[in-house]
Image 1 (tube, rainbow, N blue to C red):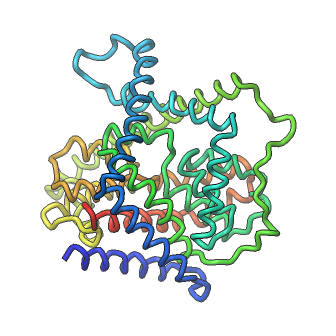
Image 2: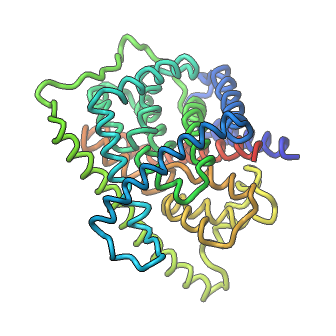
Length: 394
């Protein structure tokens, strides 16, 4: 039964992507089949084998230590502000982003990250049948983040046609930034976070290959990663910039959480007063059919649907905190929903990505704005696909 529901889920995702495709005749099915196969294999490895468990433990160990080290800096500045035994979300979950961001900056400055991103992207391009730039961007998005990644390809933006720009933006919305992975692991089981990161990388290419198929002339669009002369920063200039960038992300996420959580509480109160159920419960009924095709057990459908809708309407942090604080679901439902939540697929991301591109190239930013809703549509399908595949092994 579990396999049949998963097959149904994959077919529904493919059908929805096919309906939204801008050129169905150019869809190449062989790379899509290969990537689906890789998703299934990787899900099995990460969720059901000792090797996968060891990898996840190693990654979790790294981030646990980073969060602990970050806590020393947070305690130095904010020590004594928290009540004894309490763990304020901003101090323990968001502020460590500052430290992880600085480490990413160091790896970027020393050319370690660009090397890794470039060659993993090159290998991926052989698998996904897409251009090197798209493959590079997919890996870079999962490390640098949905706005910062466009700085690394700013030399190409001016020359990119609209269809290639869509794929780059879709990758950025389908993944998450490595700087906030540690924060996710504070709220979700690390194995679901790591699994989602890998599945979303391939899922982004799969859905883009159906929604937005095309062939690339690599000679026309060479990947340029060199820095412009005169822009080389000193080490401490770079470090200060990345620290401030991390702090801005923490503050931004914190501000959005304050606003969104309060607004949801207001809307929930209004709906309860009028129709007797909260707005989130209502959305839960709307999204429950999607939760069903992902493999969520019958008794958890409404709760799961509510969390999925909350993530789309607000952001993943709001939904993750709800998942960890509300009435618990079954282990299977929690795992599937956790995988779904690990992405930037929400309405606010349309503005973030549009603003990031517009800051680098006005005209291209306007192009991104024109297909913003289609970006969210594709990125949501990626999340559904990843959760469905992972559900086979949870």
